[in-house]
Length: 131
Image (cartoon, rainbow, N blue to C red):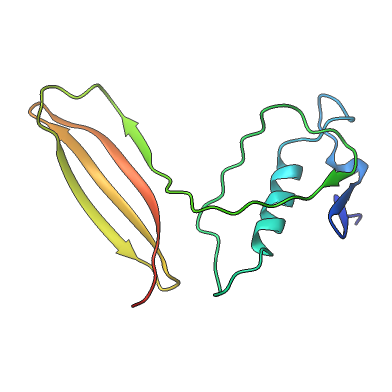
C-alpha cells in the first residue's frame, strides 16, 4: 500500500491517493487533516502531551502537490455551545460538571437553563496541570 504523504524535512510530498472524488488534482479533506494531526502529535513540548481535540477548517481546496509544513502553537480554549432555543430573561442557570481524565486532559460540560427550562448544553476540553 502506498502512503498518502511522504515527509522529507518540512515538505510533505503528496501521492495521487490524496486526490478527492470531485477532482483528482484536489485533496479530499481527510488527507490534509491527517497530515495536520501527524504534525501536531510530533510538536516538541517540555512535558509529554496528548492531543485532546483537533478541528481542521479547510477554507479552500488543497492541491495534490508538495505541501510546506509550518507550525505555530497555541492553547485553544475551545467551547462548544449547542442551543435548542434562545434563552429567556436575565437569569441563566449553568449546571456544570468537570471531569479530570488520567492524562491531564479534562472535560467540562454544562446544562444551560432559564425560567422556561433547559435550552442548551456547553462542552469544553480542559488542559490540566498537576500541582
